[in-house]
Every structure is written in C-alpha cells, then in structure tokens.
Image (tube, rainbow, N blue to C red; front, side, top):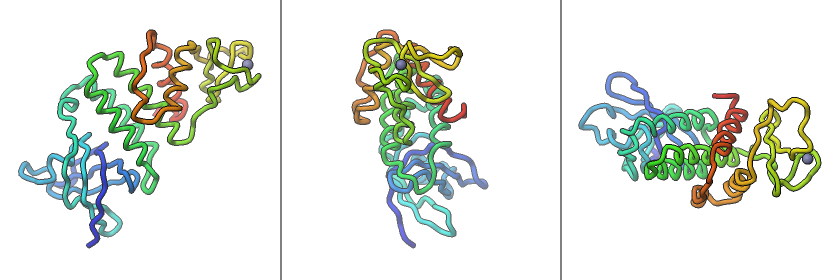
Length: 238
Ligand SMILES: [Zn+2]
C-alpha cells in the first residue's frame, strides 16, 4: 500500500454508511479530491478532528480501486472559533461552493489552497462585517486570476486609454473595462468603479497571496459589488 502525504483543507463532508465520511479536500499536490474517512464519525476516532469542515491538516492517504482513503490526519489549524460563528460561516460556505465548482482532481491547486487558507485565517481574525465582505471580494478576484480569467485592467479595452485618472466601467457580460467615453447605449451591463476601487483591484492582481489583504478602502461598496458581479459572471451565478 502506497501512502501519499498531502496538505489539505476540508471543503465538504458528507456522511457515508453509518460511521464513515466522504470528505472533499483542496490539496497542495493532488488538486481537489474526495476521500473516504473510515470510522471518522465515531467519537473516539483518530480521524474525527481532522476530517471536519474547514480543518486544515497534514493528511496521509492511500488509494484503492481509484478512490482515496484517509490513513491518518494531523490538524494544522482547526479554525474552531470560525466554525461556530454563523455569519462568517455563511460567507465561507459561499466561497467553498465556488471552490468546489471551479477545481478538479489533478489540477494544480497549490496556490488556491494557500489563498483559501489565508482567506479564512484573516476572516477568523476580523471582527467587522464590512471587512469580511472586502476579504471575500479579494478572494474572488485572486481565485479567478489563478484560474486564468483576469481581465485587462490597465487600459480601456476600446480606446486603450490608461484607466488611472478617472472612474471606469466594468462590463460584466464581456469581462472588460471601459473608460467613460467608450460606453455603448446599454448601460445596464456595466458597473461603475471609482479610481480607488480600480487601484485596489490592480493591487490584488499584482500582489503575492500573503499581501493581498493589506489595503484599506474608505468606500468599499463598489469594490464589494465588483467582487460579486465578477465572480457571478465567471461562474454563471453558481
Ligand atoms: Zn475608452
């Protein structure tokens, strides 16, 4: 039996048979995988703690008949406080659902794992509800960058004017940015973004995962809206 060591975080757990669980993990080396954790529902199981939703752990797995099984698990961070905060859990549930829909087995999810663990670590430490919304928007912008969907944000897609001095408009149908001179008739497909929002989006795109949450926004509403609309347009509202 070949043992496989991975770091991973549980993004979904479902009961299987009486005492077993099937967990979905985002891992550093196998992409998103499902694993059977035998006996993990028993209160004295050594797999109990590490196979719960949002627990980040070192896993030892083995593969049998094309399915992964958990051999042992050692928790790195259980995010215990977070798992009993229903407001925060609600936001995190939303992003784990997106993660589940955009990742797959054998995909390189090492950056996505780092992004997700950092995101929930920061949410765990944040008290303000508005800041949690900013964090979620930032997560979405970086996630779709890792998946290769970053729009060009340095210039208007039509006239090539630099998008630095003015408000600009995000076209959520075509995932492009426009200056105010180049909007077509149908304004309903755009959202208007302030200069500060555009600067923040650029900062997130250009920064390393460890730095993406270190910025302040005085009026974050259109940044939060951008994160939502951008993510919905990428996932068709999953
Ligand atoms: Zn233009």
